[in-house]
Amino acid sequence: MIARVGVALLFLVSCGTAFLIGRTAQAPTPGPQLTNRTRGGLRMLLDAPQLGGSEVSAGERTYPANYTSAEHTHQSIEIIYVLSGEFQHEINGQTHVLTTGMLGFVKPGDKVRHKTGAVPAKTLMVWVPGGDGTDLAKGWVSDPAH
Image (cartoon, rainbow, N blue to C red; front, side, top):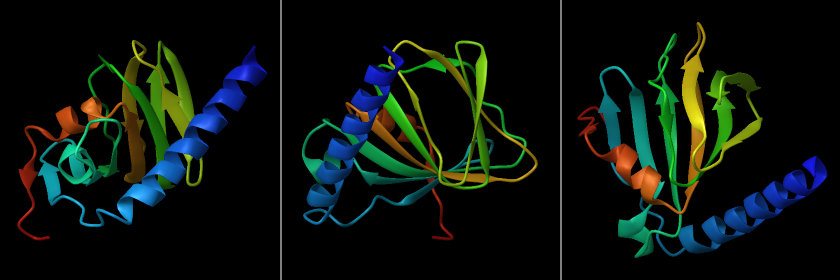
């Protein structure tokens, strides 16, 4: 069963990556750099305005040092690839530590909390379908420095 889940996730990530690469060539302009005083930065790289639909969304997210999110759930699969730093996500009470180059995921309905340690973290996040990514961007403000 675990091997099947691993193969299924690998397939999903491979298909999603191929989809993103193909589609971003058609819509290369990412959204504006957004900030949230306590939550860090977010730049939507691909979402409904660029794609023309909500099948998938992807964003680059920066987290401040010593950050802990509120516990929350997602309606979609959230795939997290750590670009730099150390990123922890607690899923249904179990903490997973991801470092640069590692991949993690959250399934719909999982209870999750995101955390960083003493160093900020930068991640690439993909949501399938893309509604959770679009919803995340609501309430953030454009960063005038970018």
